[in-house]
Amino acid sequence: MIEKYNYSGPRYTSYPTALEFDDSFTEEKLLTSIANSKSDKLSLYLHIPFCAKLCYYCGCNKVITRHQHKADQYIEYLAAEIVKRAPLFKNYLVTQIHWGGGTPTFLSPDQILKLSSLIKEHFNVADKGEYSIEVDPREIELSMLDTLKEAGFNRISIGVQDFNKKVQIAVNREQDEQFIFDLMARAKELGFVSTNIDLIYGLPHQTPETFAETMQRVLDLDPDRLSVFNYAHLPARFAAQRKIKDEDLASPQQKLDMLHQTIETLTGAGYQYIGMDHFAKPDDELSILQNEGRLHRNFQGYTTQEECDLLGLGVSSISQIGDCYAQNQKDIRPYYESVDKSGHALWKGCSLNRDDEIRRVVIKQLICHFDLDMAQIDEKLGINFEEYFSEDLKLLQTFIDDKLVDITDRKITISPTGRLLIRNICICFDVYYREKARQQQFSRVI
Image (cartoon, rainbow, N blue to C red; front, side, top):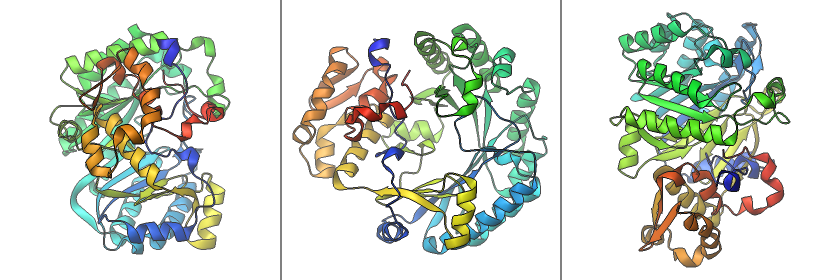
């Protein structure tokens, strides 16, 4: 079954996926989508591309440097983009902010405070909301948490990836284990309401046994959430990954074993398996919303605020506003040139048609909740599910035969094993994916 389903596929942080974005999408189309949006709440994503060191596994958009002045220049361009975009959202309330990267904590305390002040000056930021930032524990002092608290952050996500030293050396990410524990303790002292730990399975030299040891150390950290990502080895696409030897990587069977035992370990310790790569304590809002059938998914993964439009700021960032997706320039020099020329950095995007909107609802329901009531979809979207998705349901038959999916009384239910292959199941409803020649642009599911 592993061999049968181990083909390439998207992670569905959007539908259509970013492969469908094109540069014929214009600023005028984006402005129309903003004007027609029914939302009055906004989620902000800021991309900080800088990293002091190169992690060999990384496929993120990044700039490796130790020159702090480059961040000063970048903040000036971010400020120009903020000034251009913020007036378009003057009637919105910002209830969610996330800084990702790269390494947002590459910025100095003064730079972080300057940028957070810029946001509060130009946007209507709610007193209470989800304000999170990604933290690299290798390059900061404990006092950075005081700065983050002062800047208004109430959630942190710490990139650990693996506690095993051999694995860390192989991916050029050695770190001090005790400092990570000190960082978590300090975050709780300061009153951060949520802590997340990022891990990756499938890295060089990992085995189910060594990763189980990492999981036990993570349980000692006691985070509120965990993101446990599948390493996607795409050396033809990401040059740094060529430093990782194929023979050092786990087999698909070992990777699936790592994921399976991770789910068993964390659920046994009281965490809820949200899906794909997310876990949360039962009193966490992710868990609560999933249980209530109201969980959302966007470019940041599983998230809580479905009613929010998402505005991306900075190089490569993606916005999801109304019926469109819009992405900024991917590389930093074109980003600067675009902001200089027009005040914004729009590169490409897409407007959703009626079919896109219908399929987005279905894929999001399956990937967030692992079940779907056809009658509810009929009522919500004004369709007959079996007629509209007749071809898609034929593709689903192989999953039914393998007891990964059940359809009874017009309800689709994903089995516990099927949840491990939810990306494959969602592919059945993806009309763009059926252009088989494009499969190589996705990472393997296992």
